Length: 173
Picture (tube, rainbow, N blue to C red):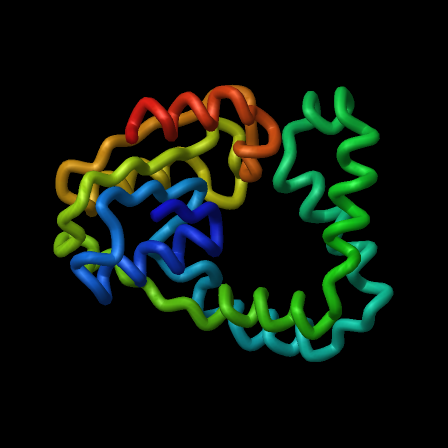
């Protein structure tokens, strides 16, 4: 079972709910901790309730700068045009629900010790949303988990460094 970012949060929960959910678990650029501090949640909820479809253009730009390194953005302008198109194709409701999922996500770190399958925690050296330190904390919380940090990429490491990403996954499996 492999999950990146929000998908990693879901994969952890699946592994916790069912001992047989995965023969191996790969958690990529994700965290078991709550995403937003409690004191920020009401403000984020209010902002999400006021979103308009035109706001997706703004958020696409914010996330593009967050999810990809400067070097990648400079070298892959055409790719990022397509990435933005896909991002902006979601409805405002889809975006709002995904973000509310992050706001409401609770910390499950205390339960990770029961995960009993081989686990790879894969982080990205330049990820500002889930910095390598958080990847390290996640790996320490899961018995026997292996930690790898991919250099030269940010949050969407599978898109920025597909060869290194695939090599890490294949090497683990």
